[in-house]
Image (tube, rainbow, N blue to C red; front, side):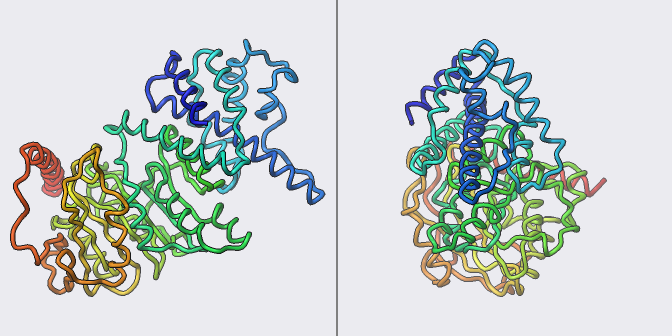
Length: 474
């Protein structure tokens, strides 16, 4: 299978309509989705027959995979294939936007996917070769799905390497896993990622819950009613849907929208989620029209996401998110107001200080993981500073074995040389920065390159703060 997908990417690289890993991953995704949809509908039809029922197909017969792929039983020739895809198939699938359908449904997913993308493949020879290869894949065999899911991960990784300057940072899977191990999601709980990049929080949460004993009804809930997220770009939407499908989440709940367009003052308890996991984008600036949706206005994207998450968390439930270090020590205006809200109306019980360079090669920003529950106010915060005894590099990243002990330590709230507890009354001006009292001196001097990169990041922060101050003075 790996050879087949490698063959497809090689074919696409030579096509005039394809430019880079983002394009060929997108094109592979929509073709894989239609093959998955055909296998899914065939399986549903077979199950209906066992119950003496007739399954109502989602797609009209002409547009089903097997009918336009099997040229012997179709009036479509290979010469007509590209015209059929561009002038008939895609317009038909885009037409689904006119159907008033619940966003939980597969039909809704079809509309969202094909409303925002197009076939970029120029050569009908290319399209013919790819369709032939994918037609031999079987989405009804678990071993095929498992293998394809890992291959698809490689495709996404290649896309990140090509496009990381323009997209949200890639979160190391080891950090995602310890965050999920710490919040320990269970069956019947709803899980939300408002700032997903490739759904790894949801996939790892699914893997965590899937190991638990469950009934058929619980398994159905896990696949269809557990996971929620938003995606504002059509280009990314199909890739993330495909990634979830390949990892076993056959019908995820996805809204095609910008998370920050939600007026959080209108959120009601029935709309909230049990668990929220995220690595929100940071270092970006939001316009006035977006800021109007929040009680505490700021241009800082990370602080708007933090407010969104706090407001969307159910009473008595829990959240774990990654934030840049400057959120902890910044005591200006909205930063201070939001952290005051977090301390007084939530239990911010733990903060994990991640090592420098954990997001290499995508970002040099120092980050932390915060854990909070929506319950009584914060009384004290347990801090843990990860010290690996080595400098992280692109080729020697952080691993799960490095940090797998953290969830147990977090629950025990143990105090060691690298962990300590701060009482909330000892916090001044809502400065939450992780200052290890057990460390007498700073670490060894940094390299000139490290200092230069940190100065660049600090410059961005200063410019953002000056922009906010300028808005206040106006």
